[in-house]
Image (cartoon, rainbow, N blue to C red; front, side, top):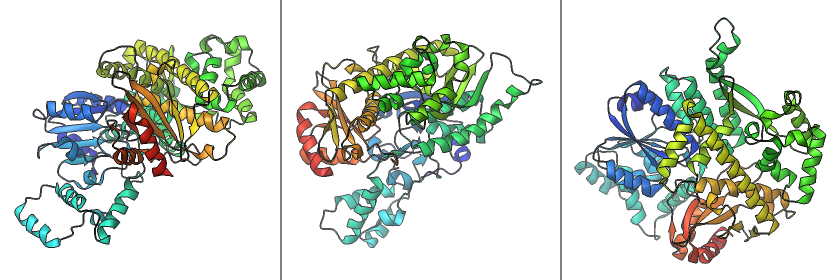
Length: 562
C-alpha cells in the first residue's frame, strides 16, 4: 500500500528498531541511501546496509538476514514485481519500498500488511482500481475463505494466483482483467527520484542539511544524465530543489552573517551541457559529450571540420581549447558560456545550456551535479578491481562525502575514460555499419575483442552507450523510418559461460516519454522460444542471454513486435 505520512508510518515505526537496508547499484539509490544514513545516525537508529545489483543478490541477502530483522527498507528495487512472491517472507516481515521503477506491481499496491510503498502519489501512477483486478469468479468461495482465514492483508496474491490458474477458456470478465493488467504493465518508466523522496522526509522532520540537499540534487541529475526521465520532469524537479537551495544558501550574500570560507555552498546554475568540462579540456568535453558529438557527427571527417568551424565562430584559439579548462585565460573564461551558447544556436544546438546546480567546497573545489553523477556511476561500475561489486559500491558511496574528495577526483578520471570509450565505440559502430534494421527495431551487437569491451559489461554503462549510440544513429541516418525505431543492443558478458547482456532502448524522438516496452517483449520472446535467459536486473529491459540462443530470441522478438 502507499504510505501517506512518511514520518508517522515509516520513520517513527523504524526509529526504535533494527533495520536492514537493501540498496540498488545506481546513483539515485546511493544518494537516497546517504540521506537515510544521515537521518539514522542523527537518531541513533541501528541499521545494516546491503548493496544489491539484481534479484538474485536480493533473494540471497534476504535469506541470509531474514531471521535477524523484521523491518526491511528497499531503495530503487522491489516495486515493479510481486515482492512477496519473490522473497517468500514470514508474515511479520514488513517491507518499506522506495523505488523509482514504474509501473508499481498491483499486488504491492493493494497489500496492506507487509508492503509499504514510499512513493509520491503525485506521480502519474494510473494504478487500476482494486475491484477491476482482484475480482472473484465465485463469490461464495470467497465468503467461505474469509470466515476461516484471518485477514492478514495478503489476499491479493492469493486471488491473483487463483486467477492465473484458470486457462484461456475464461469468461469475458477475466479476459478483460488480463487486458487491464497488460495495459498497465506493458511500459516500463521511472518516477520521482528516491533521493528527492528521502530529502522530502528529512525536510518534513526539519532535519534537512545542505549535504542532504546536494545528494538529492545528484540523485535527480543521475536520473537525467542516464535518460531515465523526460526533460519536462527534470525541469519541474529542478524547480522544486531550487527553492530548497535558496532557503539553505541565502546567507552567502549577507556579509554580516557570512559563512566561513571552507563551508559548503550550493548554487543554481544555467550551465553548459558539456560533460566534465571544468575538469577536462573544452575540446575533449565537446568531443565526448553525446549532445555535441551526435550533432556535429564527429565520427566523420566533415564532422571534425564542423567542430573546427564552431570553435572559430566562438572565437576560441585551439591552443586554449586543448589545454585544461582550469588553465585557460581568465579573459576567455569570463563570457565563455554566453559565447558558446550564441554559436551553438547558429549550429542548430538550441539546448546548449541547461538548468543545474553546482557545489563549492571552500574556494578550491567546485563541481557540477552532472560531474558528481558521472563520477559516482563510473566508480560503481569500474572494472578496475576484480573484487566483488560491494567494494565498488562502498567507494562510490564514500565519494559522495565531502571528506573523500580524492575518491571523487578518481571517479572523475574514470568517467572521462568511460565517456571517451563510449564515443570511440559509437564511432566504430557507425563507421562499420554495425547498427542494422531488423524490421520493427534496430539491432547492434558488440563483438568479443572490441576495444574497451570490458567497460560495457555492466548494465548502466551498456544502457548509456546504447542510448548515445541511438541518438548518434538518428543524426547519421538519412532513412526517415529508421529514425523512429527503438534499439536492441547486445554485448558479451562472460566468455566462459557464453552469455551476452541484451538491452532494449525506446525510440529517440523529441516527444519521447522515455517509456520502455522491451521488458515485457523480452519476457514473451524468451518464453516463446525457450531461450535460456536470466531476468536478474531491476530494470526489466536488461537481460542476460545464452549466446547460442541469440538468433532464435531475436527472430521471436521481430515477429512479436512486427
